[in-house]
Length: 72
Image 1 (cartoon, helix red, strand yellow):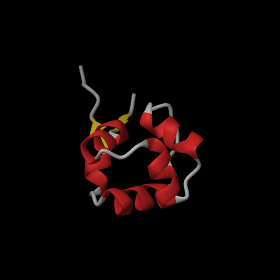
Image 2 (cartoon, rainbow, N blue to C red):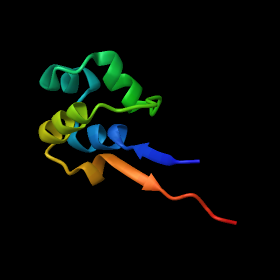
Image 3 (cartoon, helix red, strand yellow):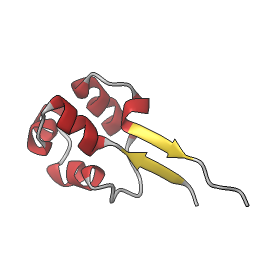
């Protein structure tokens, strides 16, 4: 099973930015930001990732983390 974690909640806490403020600054729907914040997203739009990284002044590796599968 592929596991990619979205660390948006951590980043917003560190930057002291609310979901609503991020939605306003990026133009991304608040519902989409909320899905990413709570890691409910099944797919992510690369344009959204770009906008979030730009607003939060972070690298994609700060936002997305790949957790490899354990091979038995």
